[in-house]
Every structure is written in structure tokens, then in C-alpha cells.
Image (cartoon, rainbow, N blue to C red; front, side, top):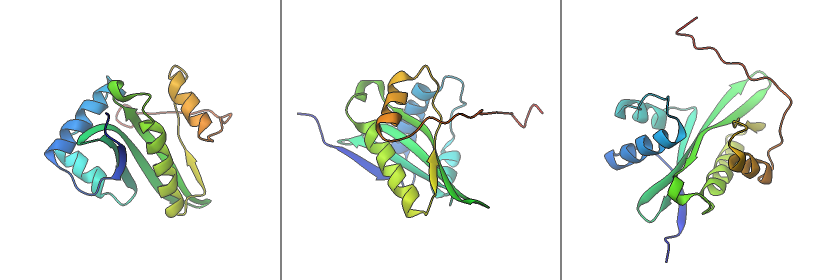
Length: 148
């Protein structure tokens, strides 16, 4: 029998959580530099970010970061770094993470919740559309301030 899935808002760092986040980050991005423990602590304690984890039993199997911030046009929210461990995909963890983040964004008063997903991530794109996200006709631009 599999353990029930739970979604938790992380309120303090731990070495076990740090190890899980590093493991999940490698599944999310092969180019992202490893997060330090201090950076994890900063992420968790920052006023504009909420880190959620999906757990099965005592094992962290997924994560999501929600950034919420005020703009002249209202409070906005952005979902980033959604990842579920390869072994746990198809369990509903991704859906539960996103729903919890959307609820949290609403609690923060966000007018909208945005996210991006590469077209090659077909399962993720289907999930977001199934949850009610609508594809927008927009251009996303990126610049690395270190190289400018």
C-alpha cells in the first residue's frame, strides 16, 4: 500500500529537506547550479516566496515555488520550479502542488497566477491546462544580468 500524499508549506529548513531539494532540482534542470543551504534558508524565509513540498510518507517527492508580489496593476503570483520525482509521476502530486499554490496565491490576494512550461514538457502542459491555466499569446524574454 502506498502512503497518502501530503502537501506542506515549508516554514523552516532542515538537512533532510535540503537533500531532497537538491535531488529534485537535478531532475528539474541540468544547468542550474546547486542550491546552498543558506540559499534554501533565504528562499523559505523570504516574504515573496512560498516553497511547497509533496510528501509520500516521510519522503519528499515533489516541490513547487510560488512567488507573490505587488505591481501597480495588482498583486500577481508566479509558479516556478515545479518538479515531481521520476518515480512519483502520475500519482497526482503535481496537481496537488499546483492547486495548493493557487489557493495560497488567492490567500495573498493575487489577481492572476502565471507559469511557463517548455513545449517539450507535454505531460506538464496537459496538467496545467487540465487545472484551468490558459495558454497566452505572449513572448517571454530573458536576459542574464551578469552577461549584459
